[in-house]
Amino acid sequence: MKFLVLIYGNPESRKVWDALSDEQKKEGMAGYAALHEALAARGELIASESLDDPAATKQVLIRDGLPMTTDGPFAEVKEQLAGFYLLDCDSMDRAVEIVGQIPEAPFSVVEVRPVRDLSAYT
Picture 1 (tube, rainbow, N blue to C red):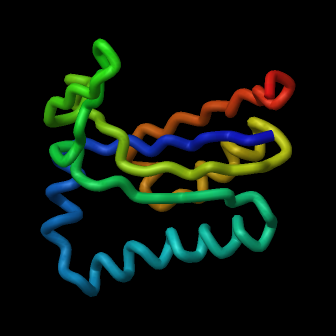
Picture 2 (picture 1 turned 120 degrees about the vertical axis):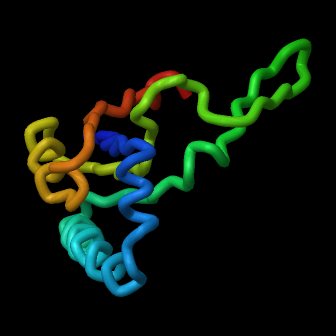
C-alpha cells in the first residue's frame, strides 16, 4: 500500500530553522538522512522532499483553457505544507510508525493519507 506523509510547519518554525548555524542545520539533517537510508533499505521509500517557503508558491487556475496564476499558498492558514514522504509499506499502522521516526514530527502536524489505486481504470 502507498501512503503520503505530509509534514506541516509554520512561519515560526521556519524562522527557528533559518536562525540556526550551518553546523546546527547539518546536525538536524542527520536524523532525516538516517531515516531516508533506513526506509530505502527496507524498500519503503518512494520519494521524500522538503518544500521551499510557502511564499514562493504559485496557485494555478485553468479558466477558459488558459492558466491564471497568483502568488502565495492556496490556503490562508498558519500551518503550511513543509515536506513529504511517499511510502510503500504494508499498512497504515506501519506508516504511522514511520512518522514517529521523522525528526520534525514532535514539533509539527503530520498527516498520513492513503494513495488511491486507480490502476483498474487505466
